[in-house]
Image (cartoon, rainbow, N blue to C red; front, top):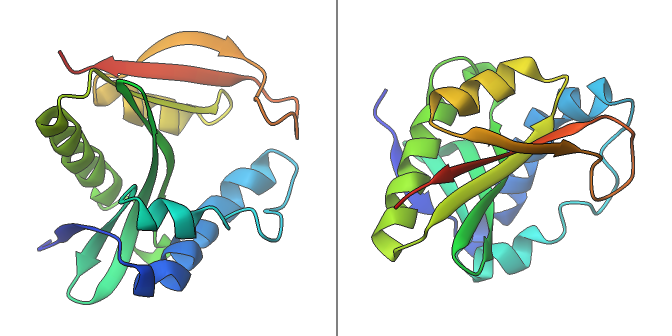
Length: 155
């Protein structure tokens, strides 16, 4: 695997939305919902702010991470890998790349949340040093599945 990690460019918006949307469809369906039209519309602003990163295999976007900055924390808001490339280590590699960027910026913590029923994701994030700091309902209120909120200190 010879991937390049880069900040997403505005011209990549549609492809980033496609990769993350396609990757998230099974997750959202497991929660009894569908991805709502326009729910990834915030990506344009996030790309303009430099808050979305992509994994490139040549010119193909094979993964993306959408982040949100909160004071001294960087939230990994959405992580998606092209379905044909899942289970190949790309998500783990991207998490490591984002962590390196966050450390270089002096960020104190990385944070994220995922549905408690998605045990494979909880295990993935735990392997990367994230620890569960609380459990609770999702802030959006669109389903009743408990979320695990996880953090990883960087200092």
